[in-house]
Image 1: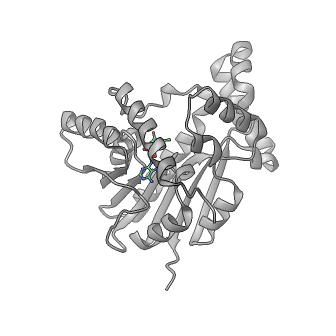
Image 2: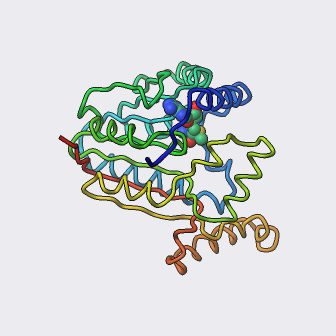
Length: 264
Ligand SMILES: C[S@@+](CC[C@H](N)C(=O)[O-])C[C@H]1O[C@@H](n2cnc3c(N)ncnc32)[C@H](O)[C@@H]1O
């Protein structure tokens, strides 16, 4: 089994944590690159680019599903980028409440948010042109969810993800410390996707394009004081290009998998 198989009580702990987060952050349901240091922004730029490119290549009004959408940080952005109809799903009612409030404020008609557990959700087969997810893979039982995603997508539909990669010992240590100091949840520290997860997803699609980012991002917090944010970001991004063979140790990955293979 690849991905997390959480017990009901672990799932509940996770949900409670995100509920608390959304109660704290009622005004931050809009994604902004500026909330990240420049040297950590690249994966999100790549995510945006993949969504835009895929949306425009489909050349039709599209239906998009944003899984584990939280407070809709990316859902609003995806709607802007694709001009499609976008559904955001998350199992935290408090997070969805924040997203719905923002939706009412903006009076957009092409977005919908629903409370739901991705592992239990039901959608019509072949309904979606694009399924996106940012930061949700750690929490899901991939065996269950991948099967559903492949069914929900149209034959030329795309699954686009940005998430954290789990092979770098330095980043993993930081994640473990974050968990010990209660800045993050157990699954966020323990369930980070690794290569077998990506291989499994790749095997279920006709095409798979992936970019690894931030292998050297661990230098960012120090370098920014020496050479400034902008040069630190340029250097960290350049080092990814030069030392691409170290991609296994990337901080994040972004992929666009297109053409689901549905198992008969
Ligand atoms: C790291 S947050 C990402 C939120 C948002 N996508 C973003 O990038 O800001 C992970 C989200 O996954 C949600 N989540 C975890 N397991 C889930 C499940 N089984 N079904 C639906 N949502 C889930 C949590 O409530 C949380 O909002």
